[in-house]
Image (cartoon, rainbow, N blue to C red):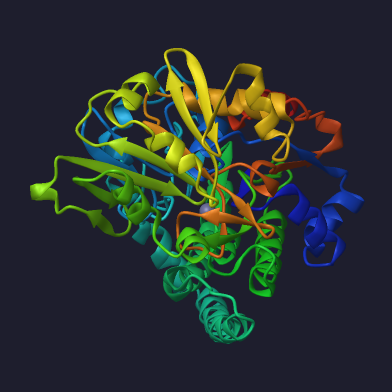
Length: 473
Ligand SMILES: [Zn+2]
């Protein structure tokens, strides 16, 4: 049984254990022989990318949390109103899913599971899928138990009250909690936590193996307040409690492994750092164009009068830019011929760390208006991670046909990353903890993640462990 704790970096996990915020995990390490194995999730450091890697061993052509599909001219996104289904047939062909014939609960993908207990990743209507029971089948028995209902009502009330207080405190400190997250997601996530917990217990009761289940409350709260904020740290206690409840209800036939998909870092929204929205800045560089932030505002010339349309898709500190009418990715040379100096002007913004483009088979990086190719690009990357590894990770993303014509990474300013989305904490880009999640596993299982430089490389390790443990029963 694998529990996915979304958005918790390895450093944050260690710190939370040290500070006594995760007593159950601490106990696993102290008396059950568990240890923290760090790994690199790769770029983009987002859930759909990392989870596809973990579950299928293949996360190619997933360039972001949301992206523009040029062939189908559709915005692909996850979460509420997921549109991945529209392009799903292009993905995972010939892969051996990790949860084949098992249960896959609250994940972005079905991953070959026989059941998802009606709970998918922020999409509670997955029940249309073939191998899914309706959410009502989980919800009704859950709510029928007065203990569960009381537990949930009490906790929701407590979380709502705390959240109101946390927002007030954060504002008084001059911070700006991301209100869209605060209003719905935090409280909702607590409820989903309870349901997921319950679904895992049901899945164990029904003997499914393996079971994979995602817990998202920490990631949601960290987006709203920042990963180091007391509100996010308090939710970690709740996560720890959920892990404890799940573990306590498992029979001796189940082993538990805990992992995360990426970390989070403190962020400052682009508009706060620059004064104008990124879309507005880009529209200024493309006269006559209509520029649309795919989950935000529109800038430039109205669509009907425009000579062309540009779509911007954001995942935290990562932005993909798509010339919307094109059916194929712009080659850097072609882009320069049509829109000279666009890439260099964006790379010259203080709020931008890097711009990435593709010239034939070659990666082109731009920073401060300068072009960097080949090994020279490594000098740009040293401050973010091991530059050889990071260059390979970026190069892989840059090889995706689904990547933007230009790929933009937010800069670090005052210890915080510039984020294209309006969040207090974010991920998706490079730098800091966002690239460094963990696998918490028993030492005796010999899980070695030290060489893992992308979540897809975790898949064979987990498949091997699954077979190894299954052979013991
Ligand atoms: Zn997230």
